[in-house]
Image 1 (cartoon, rainbow, N blue to C red):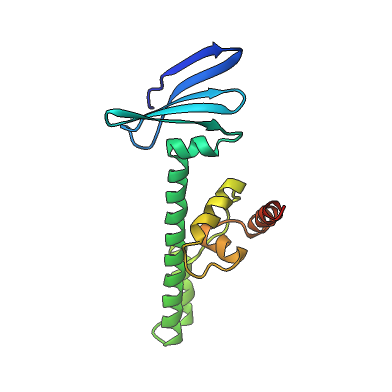
Image 2: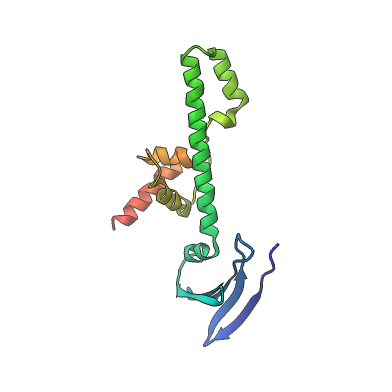
Length: 175
């Protein structure tokens, strides 16, 4: 477990919490100063210099981005998308072998049953609204993503949850 440096202070009746945030890369260190009203200051060493960020964030999305949590989630989603497209390709290759008479229908179903992970895309994850937003952002650069079903399949999200979250996002964006 990564060692964390912590410091708490009170500045003008505002509680301040300073913490060395762990990142995916052990040589990247970010010191965060977060106040209870959503304001924060972050200092990141960069060579012989420091980069200082300051702002207000009511949620954790900005801080997650700064410490690399969003990056890690994006990598996870992209890896899942590539693996699911590979499963679809594998299925269509196997189906093509069936249609060309290279394998029997029995062999087709036996192969899928024995190696389900190579051919079947499961849509089991109940994604958070943040994860849906990340998937939407990533899907803009991926071919043939046209609707919520495509997003659900690509990222293994539950179709019903994806539909509901996309409706919420649409209604919020149209306000």
